[in-house]
Length: 510
Image (cartoon, rainbow, N blue to C red):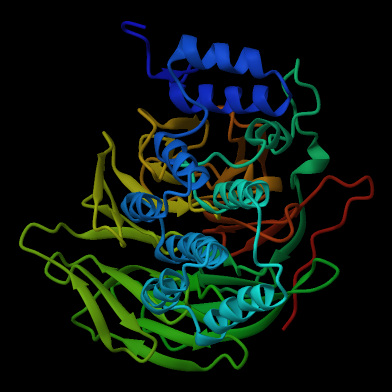
């Protein structure tokens, strides 16, 4: 159709081609084959991708050389996934060559094809043993119907292993509806106050000055906080949802502006304001390493998924971005004459992308596997960055009193925007959280905490309790009803669901 829009929805965020593929898949799965086929013809959108359609044809006809060539040419497939599906194809080749008595070709698959996948010798030997055993038992001579059925099973198995958009995940539309928390399809779903934290259940008062940053550990068992009192504190989350102090980390000479948990939660990074970066052992509370020197001012830091490498950004343009191992060995450096200062950065939890905030208004997303880079410009200054647990989305706080939600893949034409909080002068941080990470929370300069549903630009809750600017918030990833906020009033508040018998906020004791 001429001049047909490529996106749908009032916000222009839905890719029309993907939307139609999902609908066509749903029609086929429900048994409405004629309707699905009609929609394919009318829209010009095929449920099966061109690549997978070709693969299916090659497999069903036993055209193995072309099948292998197609699999090797498909882009954006991880090496381990490609090896896995190729192994399945080689297995079928081996069986069919033996079945028709072509032992030399079968041996060639084992000796030349399979070794390129770097499979273990045990896996290769097991493959050969199992199929040769069938032949010895005189079960190896399979008729055409059995071979045809095995090829169909291979197509189905490849469909389960190959990633989108080559293959759609099974029952994608049903999954999207089920994970949207919608109770009724005909009405908008509204979360009750009992589904989000709205009341203060505990106040932590151990910091002696402004609390600038907080973050729950990935397993939800700890909370780390940093303060302008030059300390960071590790708090333990108890079974009764109360927090107790585990360690006070004293080593920085300047205020501690930032902390970052290793993915395995055994280590914690603390970032001194205009100072060095320190690595701590969570269990013992001891400092294991100090990165850089007083000439390297760290502005932000993040971990890679293996918990063995870190990446740090500097406010000094000449220093750029550095990758270190946990012993302080420099592994990689990104710097250049035109590289601006780094304000914030993050590595997605899948290790695929490095997202950096440069010189106030510039966002760069570097694919660490392909080195492809996206560059996004905001109209107003960015103060902070937060990435969703699934690595698909990120949010940035702007000093224009807006939060922008964007997709990491860069498919959206424009971001989702959230307003209502106050931010003009200070660094305010926000986060994803709640059930299925369907909410966004943020601090604010007007002493309050704001919560939005990701589908709505206006807040669904405003939490009062702090007496000064709320700098940072963190949602417990394992306890969706636990939210923490940090303020210039020297306190950390722990928020929980509304209760009929309100709990009096209690100060903790060391």
